[in-house]
Length: 484
Image (cartoon, rainbow, N blue to C red; front, side):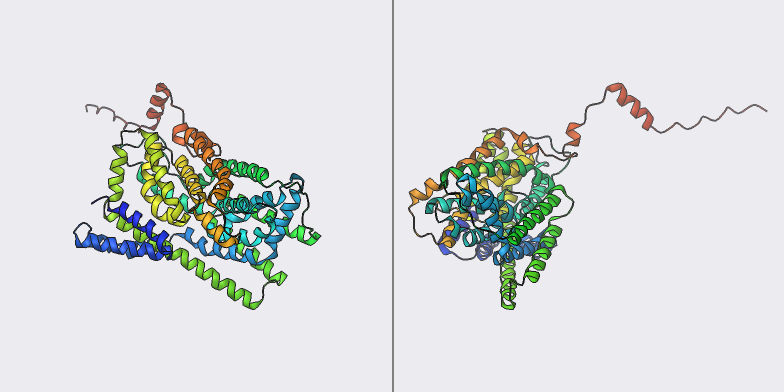
């Protein structure tokens, strides 16, 4: 009966595809069904399910989750301001000599803005609205592939909300992994934190972005070098956006400010600009706040559903059962790790990034880290697998969202596959590189990342000297008493 958790995952996947109902409702419904079945059959302790309210309260006290409504608000606000359009126009003018200016500008725009949107769905909504009309000279399948890949950039480009939440999840997963008796690594001196994950993901993210830029240039070359005309004020506004984003991203990446503080700063700057420019009327602000509350509520409901799902999953003992299977695997550490990543890839096409982080990662990340022996490498591999899953046609989440919002019309599966294939090859190659050469994720490690492993061994005589210095001084011997 320990495998019941896998049947929970399978049931959830089928319901997501077949019903179209909100994911949070399906998570809670599936959890309730399996939880009740476990209690009735005596396989699940009712007292364990009673711990759910306390877990939810403790989870919502996490200050990182305060960034969720801020990210949602910023993404929705940018969609309504001319700043985003001016930014894309400026990038188009900067790339006009390449012959593929709209496509390259789309990737650059996504790299700057998509991480602040908070989700693949929000990124797809912004890109299809602002960028889609400017890709008229590109074949529909290739335009859809470009926008889908751009929407998925926020999964790997630091400091996106996906990366921040994954960093928090990897902290817990690393803590569990180092306690496993079959842990294969040596990085037990310090548990990873969010900054470690941000640094680890930067180089692979740049490789993916560079590879996709080459693909976009090859696919979208039209030979035209025309670009939209921008006024001097519009150029200054776009440059101000680039500067502000660069400063905030650098501050978060270097640890000067936290993600919540950076998101709040960006939100205040965007609101100040909207008020000064008077682009939004009263009804626009009401609509913006209503949409922000709806999106934030959906994200928190998803978090509650995922927490409920993971509790029932663990109540069945499926996490321990999977851990035992991974521990007793006769295939070796790397082959078993590859199989675990493959399982994550199977879940990615039907679950959003947040669902993956809240539901799948806490279950599979500890054995993955234990087999690889490197939490940073495991985190980057998970990100790349998520990105690949979101782009797999025809059910990849980014593909589905972009196709539904773009209005490009029907297209054959063959043309869609041909358009997406190059964008799938790039993260796959980076995935293989990170799997084979873990040093790629350690190029930007902080000074204390592996302090224990990097400390040189002291000579025996030096160790003996230090021990003598640290030893307490002996009590003074009293002089012998003299005979009177």
